[in-house]
Length: 345
Ligand code: GLO
Ligand code: MG
Image (cartoon, rainbow, N blue to C red; front, side, top):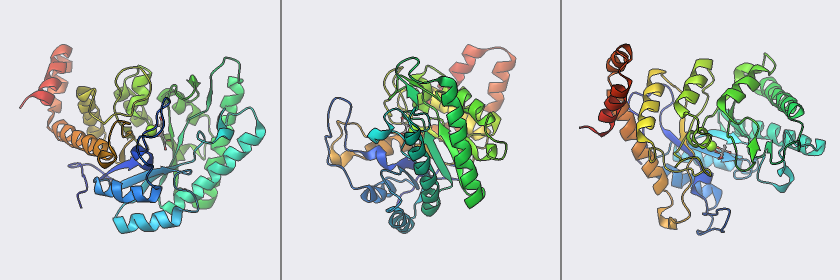
């Protein structure tokens, strides 16, 4: 069976994707265009698409399903790259989990988070991701922002201490920033904000907290994804990565990696290669509503193919030339050199 590998990648090799990436095709204005595929049936589909890793939320692969998922994955030669407590799908979390104004909702969020730590271990994943889903606000003064920040610190501290006590450093946490959608304004909107939050956690848990930056989330905010990645690397906090692409500052599209800004994606891979990034590389893409059921995994094939082409080209980028262009202050020429690496023979 084909399994994509990146040439000379340091550390963990192989690619990954979320089970939710091959969904039924809903969007905010229309229901499904494809029959939903049972979650466990999605694992062989990811494997057949060349993925070495799968990712899932607790509402997709529940704690009860986890032993069967782990067994099936083993049979398929796949691993779970990360697991996420869903703080955004159920109506009870409509105004957030850790930052809800309602203490009963915050309590339930915490219970789900701790349970998800246990399930992460059952699935054999080394990372649990927190995505800020509904942690935020639509109306100003709907929440007290300073209280919300304290609640996030308290919540992550609790989860961190629970993991350390029960599993040592077996499980690490990667917080995934996003500026908006589904909320008008989200807490943990960008990489800098999350790094600051981590710096306010208890000293003992800080080492097990890092980030999972996603290409589209930086681009929705008009921020440069490469700098976001460099900042995480500088802080030693690039625990995980979600690759995709985004066509401008609009709703979150989860398009195939490499589709909209290949030159920037090439430069991103140069940065990852030079930093010897050893963690997993996973896609967070969404099979579009218009794709027919039989082509549902095309988005993974296209993303993987683009990544491999760009990765190989990135390996050939002459780093000495980049240095030379910087020295001579020929920055437009540097951009032309990158274009040559991308488009030239
Ligand atoms: C949505 C996010 C979401 C997270 C996921 C992590 O915009 O990208 O899909 O990546 O909840 O498991
Ligand atoms: Mg994501």
